[in-house]
Length: 110
Image (tube, rainbow, N blue to C red):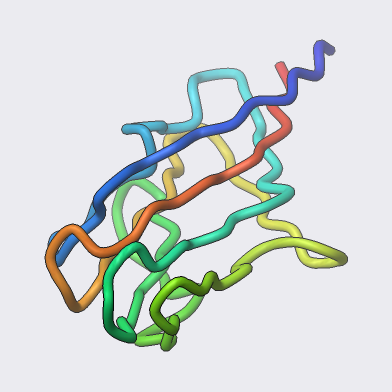
């Protein structure tokens, strides 16, 4: 089994669900999200949703979490991790247009 660390990045996330860097866990691969930070790039406080999609359904990790202007929200990090399997993805949405960026650090196991 090969282990590969990667970053997945998404800019200017707005009011529609955005799959981070259009990343879906490939076939025959497991993925551990070891870090996920959402940064507010707007001049006002925003509320963000982060969801995991299992190729059929969306499941909230956080819902309407406030992020102050110029601040960030660490959704995954420290002792918390997310395990994703083939076909899973992570989506982010804000309550304001083009108001946040997302950085997701992952470990792919193939």
